[in-house]
Structures are given as C-alpha cells and as structure tokens.
Length: 419
Image (cartoon, rainbow, N blue to C red; front, top):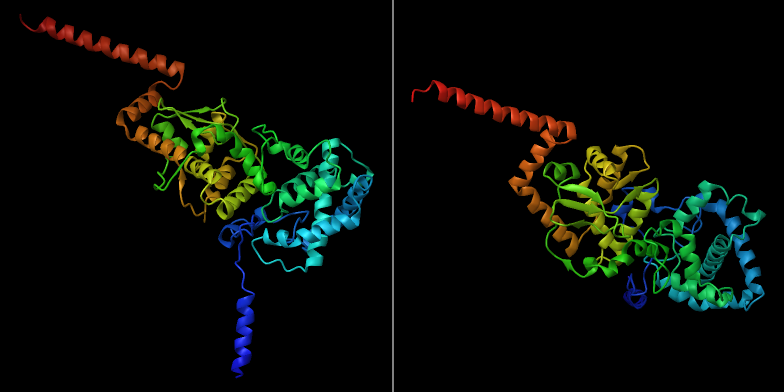
C-alpha cells in the first residue's frame, strides 16, 4: 500500500467536502419515508422543470413544446433588450447560485444546467404570458386539451419540479418584456384557481411556486393571532367530528374569514371551519406543501398543523358525512370513504417539532368541553328527543302526559288515604 498516495487522496476528498445544504437551499427531494406513501403525488406527469426530473423518459413528449415556447419567447423579447447571447451569459453567471438552491447533488455539467434553466424558464415565461394576455396561437392546439392544461399547472406546483423564483424573476426582468406587468403578476394570474383567499401580489415574497401555494393558505393569517406563537406542548388528540357532535359540539361554516385554515371554537359549543373543496388533486397539493414545511419550514409548519386537526376530525366516512352535511366539506371525490382515507394518510411519517398555539388552545378547549358530563347529557337528550320539530313536539307531549299521569296518580292516592 502506498501511504503517501492514500494520504493525498484523503486530502483531496476533505478539500472537496461541502455541506449538503446551504442557506440558499429551497428546493428539495421529498424524504423517502414520505415519498413512498404516494410516489405519484410528488412526480411530474407531463412536464419536467429544473434538474431533478430532467431527462425522464415519461416526460419527453413535452420537450418539443418547451423548445417551441422558448423560441417564441426569445423572439418576443428580441424586440426589446434581449439577445440570446446576453440571456445565456446571465444564466451562466447565476449557475453556481442556482445549483446551491437544490438539496441534492445535480449530476449535470454547468453547460447542461444552463441549457435546462434557459429552456425551462423561457417555457414558463411564454406559458404565463399567453395565459395572462390570452395570446394563444395554432401552436397551442395540444395544450388546449383540458387534461393537459390541468396537469401542467399541477406539475408546476410540485416541490421537486421547481426553479428558484428569484432566478425566474431576474431573467424575466432582464428580458425587458415585463415593463407593464411583473412576473409575479403573471404568476398570480396563472395560479389564480388556487388563490381562494384572493391575495394580491403586493408585498408577497416566495421561494418558488410550491411556496406560493403555501402562501395562498397562510398569508391571510398574518392579520390574526394564528401565527403569533408555537408551543412545545404535546398535541392534544382531538375527538372525531362524530364524537364531537355526540358530546354537544355544533359545526358551522366560518364565512367571516377568507382563510381556509381559520378554525375557531368560541366556547359556546360551535366549532367554525371554513369551507374546503376536496378534489382529485387535493392530495397532491396538500402533500407537496407538507413536504415543503418538513424540509424548509419545520418551525413554522402551520399548514401541517391544519392537516393534523383535520386528521383528528376525520376518521371514518361518518365524519366526512357530518362535515359535508354542515357545508364544511365539498366532496368532489364522490365517495366519503375516499375522503376519509385521504386525510388519514396525509399525516403519516410526518415529524412535528412544535404546534401552533392557536390550534393547541382550540384542541384543549374542545377536549374540556367534551369531558363535561352536563354537555354530553344535553347532547344525548337533544339527539334522542329533539332532533326534529316533530320529534321535539312528541317528546314534549309525552313529558306533559307523564306529568299529568303522575298528578292524576297522586290525586287518586290522596282520595283513598283516610284523613
């Protein structure tokens, strides 16, 4: 064994050692224990963006369309300040920074990564531009297919299928086409279907499109005490929706808030929950937001907290039926069992280091309410004797009849008892 040769190899290895994650990292491979529960939820179906899924045989059909859009955008921008050489030079300068934004080693040469970023960014620019301005052409015949349009939009929201937003924004600004509307304006327009809280782009900062989806859920909470603190206390296991109803809790739709996560329990036995529409792609979107929080926001996992509460509330199809009946869930899956399975599976293999104080207090108050025997007795009487007006009337009539019978019996006894 050549000792000097071994020592030199070891020194070279140590000199090349770098931390696996940097402060710039914001795009992650989904952890294996989470990904294996539903591989398809994290894997693009029609279009790859960024280096993680580049070259996948399943996604090659879209490569031609990406090149067409790349060419169209470069021609569109060519009349302003852009030429291909300056665009490529800008990406080359940013290539080391782009590489540091990814959690895993990128097995592409600098030249290959520049090409991937060029094509993918310009494809996104042209797609968003045409959507914003309705500027479609004969080249879009295939992309007009509803199933493909939906899948492209969903693929662009997957955590592993991202390019840093700062790079997209910088290149779009460099192209010179964004003089009237910013790239963030175009982004909000393209993903407008998921913007149920009706946010505006003002003062919004995001890492990438998956982060934007999370912002759609969390941004309205900044005006509420919801995000003011977290607790290291163990989570209080909340009873299911059916059990809460049996204990006297009433469910109602929270129409006062435009935030889906704004759950409230007033203490007057009413749990208010904003309406949630459960669709075919709900699981995919929810899983990717939770994966992002696991990797990037472990101490601010507010969306994961929200899913934990829903997981407690929904155990069986009966719980789903309770929430559907109250208008809290809109079930577009059709099958209540499918909805129950969806929520029961989301929180598996999730690591929780702390919990929202707001949700912790809500769960604690609900638990205290449920263990009060008076509340349960009232709920049982109401369920058994007053669920409908006719049932209530019959119960009251029966109770009056019982009282009258008791009075009659007492009077009869008094008549026969000697004075």
